[in-house]
Length: 358
Image (cartoon, rainbow, N blue to C red; front, top):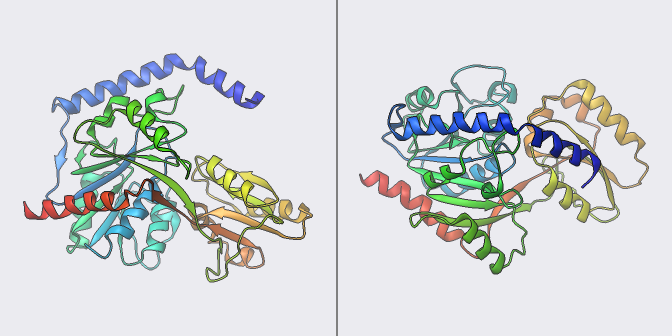
């Protein structure tokens, strides 16, 4: 562990009293919901919630996209997100002129990749759902993006994600750890997915994690890995660039967990440098000047800039400035391990169909 990480961990340890206070508040809130002092409202339609117990980096956006690919040809599906770091307030429905500043980067990503899917944002899901259904009455199911802690709405199917490298079973409350909810809240999920697993995860390792999480009889446990696609130019998606071992990469990111991406770039290029911003960073023209400056100093003959799809929706507004830059977007998606993809698909579709029969 380097000095920076050691210092960071030491500071987190000193914040244990604040973590205990935060945990007590979370515990009290959950008990108020459990005992119906605070009310959870059920909606008369299939609601699928994708969430986690920790802050950021478990792969919620790729999981929402995974579900959209799964369902978009089966039912009229919609997504509802909070729209983190957007410049608007209240309920907003995405349309042809929408940008990331209006609905947030992740919803904008859904809107661009799935233009036929209804994409909406709203801080209060309880208020936003009726407005969404009023605007799009043919909607048959809604995916709540990052809605596991928002217990005012009771989802019919909760999909809980936990990072292979930071399982919720080993974590602690913020700010000492990354938990924003109790570990025991995992019991509210119907499906648990361990994300960002090594592609070669063994059945022995799978069994150990399953024993550690100890899913309840009604819960299904899945394991997924990240699959990276071929990078495409941010302004010209038809222009692709395959990574190779003679390539120097400038990695530009504003995401919560960069480690799997770093490993992928490192194993598929000669070398790389990186410019890292905080999660959901709103890029400025000065940031682009810094990118251009750093890129010009890279002396390798074969060199490109790589960013994520989430970052790309916040960068694409600088069309003129990006036109002459070799800035490529690296797509990712979940792949379910151990040949259980069909089982997950069946569980989600069965939930929607069974709900419709009620």
